[in-house]
Structure formats: structure tokens, C-alpha cells
Image (cartoon, rainbow, N blue to C red):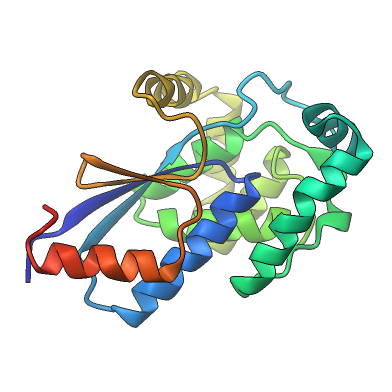
Length: 215
């Protein structure tokens, strides 16, 4: 069995393709429980300049895609691909598009405590399944409590502006490295795999790592 290989995932909690990509990866890893990956999640904010209070989701989507019909058309494929991945998106429940800066801070802190995978899963679920405002610090504190973190400590860290600069710098560094979209998966620090790739691709990557073709 080869040594563990780093799998760095650049993602944003409001990115539906990131949620779908995670579901595909999870399925592949379930089929290969002795997989070689050491997984870390990293910030790539779709809207790094979003104000802290976020904005109305309908206005955001129509501005992004150029009108209501274009927004609906863009999300039709998202819903279809999510269903194919076994996910149910409750998009009608989402009222606001949040800033994800604080969500990324929580993911970072969860990583320090060995709870990063749980944090990512819970934040995706809160946003896409429950329609919760993941830009709201109280919501994020509640999510923290649900994954075994100290919610009161998390709130104090939010108020102290801890790690804001680090998250912004990591986001900027990803762009300087040439990353242009999320999700982007980086295998072994060298091989970039963009987009929500199917489980079959991950099965092939795992096989190539085991054969020594990828280090």
C-alpha cells in the first residue's frame, strides 16, 4: 500500500457543484475504504467581495446569470446532476446568498480539531437541504455544536476576527496559483482535477496511485 497522498479540495459552501463533487468523491471512497487519500478542504470563495450580510438570492442569481430565465436554465442542470448524485437540493428554501468567509473560518478551525469533514458536510447540508443562512454566526455556532465543537468558543473566535486574513490570503493564493473555479481537486500537490468528477474517475485515480502511476 503506498503512502498517503494529499488530496486538497478547493471549495465554497454555496457552490452546488462542490456539493455534487463531494458526493461523487464520497461514493468512490465508500467503494475503496482503504483509499490512499489524506483530505484537506481549502477556501475558494465564489464571491470574495460579498458583504457580511449577503444579499437576496433571487437578485444575486439574476445578476449573475443575466436574468430570471437564464438563472433557471443554469440551475436546471445543477438539480439534475444533484439528483443523479443522490442529493436533494431544497433551493426554494434559500432566501439569501451569504458571505462564506465565516463558514470557511469554521471549516479551518474544524480542521485543527480533526472535524473538518464533518464541518464541510454539515455546512453543505444546512445550506442546500435546510435553507439555513450559513453567513449567520449563530447558525454556524449551532453547526459547530452539532459536530462536537465548542459553540461558545466559536462565537468568541468570530467576534475576535480570528483567521480572517488567513482565509482571504489562502483564497487569493489559490487564484494566483491559477485556480479559476470550484471545486478544484489537487492530487499529491501536483495534479489538478477541476469540476464535479464522477466516482468512476476517482476509482481510476485511486487505482493509478496504488499502481504507482501517481505519487
